[in-house]
Amino acid sequence: MSAFLQRRLASPAKVAWLVALTWVGCVYALGLVHQPDVAGNAGGGFWALVLALWITATLSVAGLAGLKTRSKTAQAAIDLFTPLLFGAFLFFLWEVVVVGFGVPGALMPPPSAIWERILVSGDLLWADFRQTFLKGVLAGYAIGCLSGFAVAILADRVPFLRRGLLPVGNFVAALPIIGIAPIMVMWFGFDWQSKAAVVVVMTFFPMLVNTVAGLEEASRMERDLMRSYAAGYWETLVKLRLPAALPFVFNALKINSTLALIGAIVAEFFGTPIVGMGFRISAEAARLGLDMVWAVIALAAVAGSTFYGLVALAERAATFWHPSIRR
Amino acid sequence: MTSGTSPTTSVPLVGAARPGLLGKLWRGNLGPVLAVVAAILVIWYVAAVLMNWTGVSERFGRMGQEATAGTIFWQTMAEDRPMLPAPHQILVELDKTILDVAPTSRRSLVHHAVETISATLVGFLMGSALGVLLAVGIVHLRTLQKSLMPWVISSQTVPILAIAPIIVVVLGSIGLRGLIPKAIISAYLCFFPVTIGMVKGLEAPDRLQRDLMRTYSASSWEIFWKLRLPASLPYLFASLKVAIAISLVGAIVAELPTGAQAGLGARLLAGSYYGQTIQIWSALVVAAACAALLVVAVGLVEKVVTKAMGGRP
Image (cartoon, rainbow over all chains, first blue to last red; front, side, top):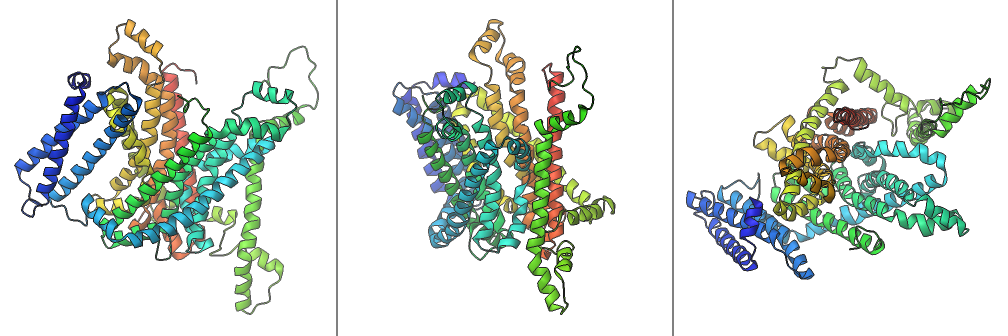
């Protein structure tokens, strides 16, 4: 069916009309649903409109996905716009369903209410962000990744240690490490140090396992070549094996960027000063202030994606030679 | 590896068995792993003595008792609520809560572990099914690949684990209680690695192999069943191992601040409220054992399936 649709929707003009139609329809429906007599008891006509919009939105996404242009920038723009339209429509559905059916805000707030909450309580969110992310996450991430890397180098230098540490590391990496959070809170107190400690333990093992695997990446031939150049262990490490290991190291850095945020937030459930994203989530959830909970989640999602994106950018800059990046 | 294939012409060396065994241990992985584990245990005991020292000596001081260093040393490994319990204390607690009480009792760790594992398994099944379905859709429909795939990836930067307890609360207020909310968290966590791995696996057959199928005039349905699916199995099982481990993490965290009565997460939280460190550690050990057990179970299923499909194990 998809192929049929794409043949029917091959012309950019048709797709542009569909997108514009969906857009106007969605804006109209949003205006309609927020009127006091519609909100909470929207009638059949309104839901028919939403259903029609759903169909046009599906058609426009299908049409956009099928568009092919010669120009590289235009193709990149289309590839970016397609998922954006898809996501925007999901948010539209969320808003319309929640407002249209009058779902109580304590159960599921609409996106508009969450956005208002973000605008109103910027100071509070910034304080939480500073406490959890800038202090706990970044400190723990740096210490955990660096020590994982250092131990990996040490394990590489001492083969006995590598054969012993690697199976143990692989085993520990699969364990529910998050469970040590209450112990760390007991040892390091309520403030950000205990959250950083949890993050250190969570990020250490992925880094260790990945770096050790990456150091195996340089082939026998390449190592022999370095030997024939009379390069010593350290020279071979710095000039051949570490660069070859970089894709693995960055893989660990990316995995760790999401793990770190999760670790810090969950650790705050076990005890915290009265600031921090995890504290805000559990405190607001207890008094059913779900708009604030979702605002913190949105903040965490933006922080997490930005962190991940920065690591990915650094990866592009550092491993420009790798086949997956070189086009 | 090559042991046991000794050439028949060589004279068997008398007394060579012991160094051979030791050498094999040394060269294989078992020896080093045992050494590392032993080192961890030694460090653990030393840390236990050091971390509990001040607490113990202060208590002796408060009680007005003269205590020699020896008395304090032994007391550091026998505390009721130590900063860090010694490994044998955890073993004793495990023995008490697993072997000494009936598995159905609220005091039994088996009861709590079963509670958590059942949520883990239900969530794992739901999540893996969703993951496989999404992957099949993404591989076959260009629209889905273009519009859904970026959201599948960015869904993972939302620290969903951190809001798991709240999702449990919300689901509870619309009448879903007990196993299902925890399973939903687990499912959300484990669909992602399955989708990513399965997409990779379904696209593993290259152009040449797909063209061969076309020359056999195979429909895309047949290509899926006879080429893509078998080719994707190694990728699928690798992701399933990751998925079941995160699924357990999800189930444990979902039990945290929601007042769950049973489960390893509830056990952790109760231990942290009352400062029962030995209880926390024994729950952690059981959680680790469960994780290992589940991953090994997936590995066994992989072996059986690979063998049944005619693959070489």
